[in-house]
Length: 117
Image (cartoon, rainbow, N blue to C red; front, side, top):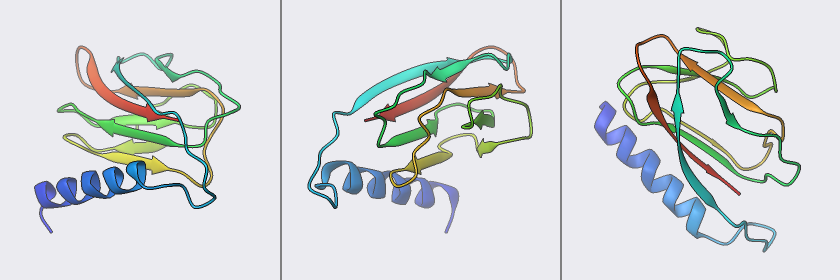
């Protein structure tokens, strides 16, 4: 499966899961944001949230982004790797409630699409 087909398939899967009722009949209030990720390990993508039950991170840039979902600073080539042009992390079972930080090794700001609920 080529990259574009895989990205389309993952987006379709995300839409399916985000629009279908949750397995336990609960629904999350979803919030969509675009975060500018920098070359600094202190770029906080999400603050701590004790009520987070869904997390989607999608790289909408031309550079690989690395995210730390354990509450610590992000480091290049460590943590969760989100490939350029659509790399996605979807979490709905075990969802981190700590601060999420991300970093990239390119230049300028890079867009990261964030959905949480």
